[in-house]
Length: 145
Ligand code: HEC
Picture 1 (cartoon, rainbow, N blue to C red):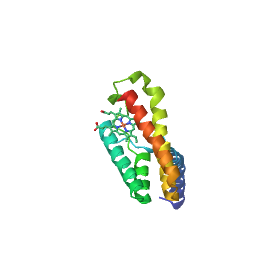
Picture 2: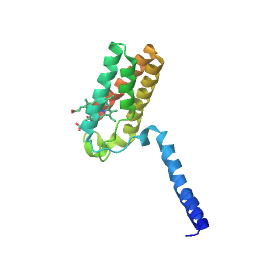
Picture 3: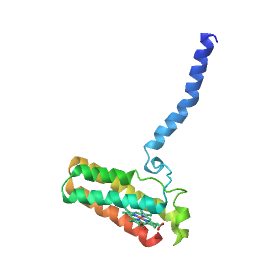
Picture 4: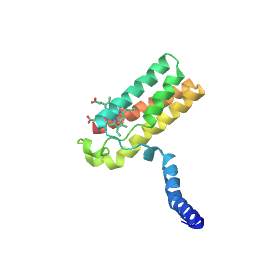
């Protein structure tokens, strides 16, 4: 194959691949899209989240900000249950489309803020965001669980 053809092919391949790479990168910066679909049921995802929450609370109580940040990032990046939320919800299922993004956002944003506060060693802010996050857990459970 002449070298010029090879170069043209390489450049075309790059041009084809570039928008996809950019799109993937863009999705990465958004909380919702970042969560990959997993093989876990909603219950398993929740059990993982509960473990992360325990880590945060343990970290707060022993003043270990590394543990707090780890737990918070675990929640912020929690996996999506297999098939999304819908298959697992029976109670108030009609409210799902309106409420789930709001609830999820409340928990997600708080988790990101907890991680930031832990990194900064800001314990007051951390506890405020933790309280908001737990309200998010409880509100969603009251509605859908
Ligand atoms: C978007 C709604 C929603 C949010 C937000 C949410 N949960 Fe859940 N959670 C559920 C639902 C629905 C169930 C019931 C799942 C089932 O039984 O299949 C559940 C179940 C659970 C369970 C029980 C698991 C089991 O073994 O039965 C735990 C623990 C839990 N969630 C922890 C949390 C914590 C901690 C948070 C906040 C950091 C949270 N959840 C936020 C919807 C939510």
